[in-house]
Image 1: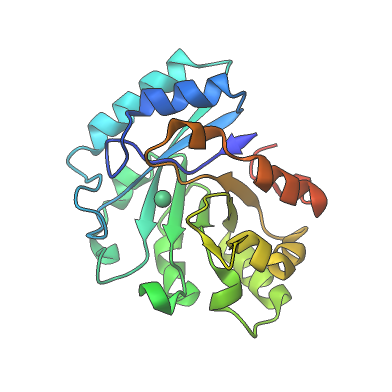
Image 2 (image 1 turned 90 degrees about the vertical axis):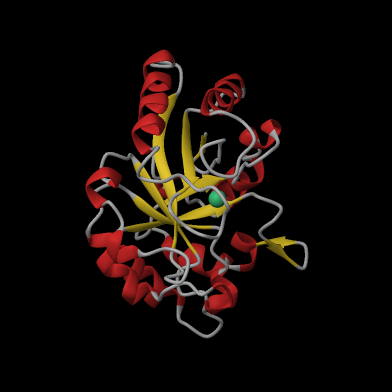
Length: 227
Ligand SMILES: [Zn+2]
């Protein structure tokens, strides 16, 4: 029962972190992560190093407030497009205070994301669980052996998000459904999360059911990042 992908007023979301966490708690979630966009020109007002201390203070207060009811995680989403985010100059010391980091568009030429190989350097500077969110793996690796990709992600210690956002679909299917062959190969190798990529609608905070069903259907429960 997790949602590890939500946005707030600290980047391009509508609601403050407190509203997201309250909705998650009411919906019976066990883990909720706040993951605002960090220093990317993809969004007009991303989270930056300047307001990062306030962001952390807000989330830490929520951690305390909800202790014993729901696990509140601090995170960010990092754009792997080097034209929009300067990965060489990210404040890694600050980022290492976070509980979780999401990368978007890795190895995705359509969105200018850096290759998985190039991402190794960025990943190695971060000491928390890191994952690939709303990843259109079927389109990105049409001809790759899923076992090879699974080994590579395992070596880089990256989890993969099952994104239940209706924005991340093609031909009416979610990216995880299109990439089913990869998720099967992740068994025993690659951890998984569920994320809704909530921006504006609070009911999306608890929109995880389809992801849970997919995980259950493929017997991937033990691959979940948090049990
Ligand atoms: Zn997002």
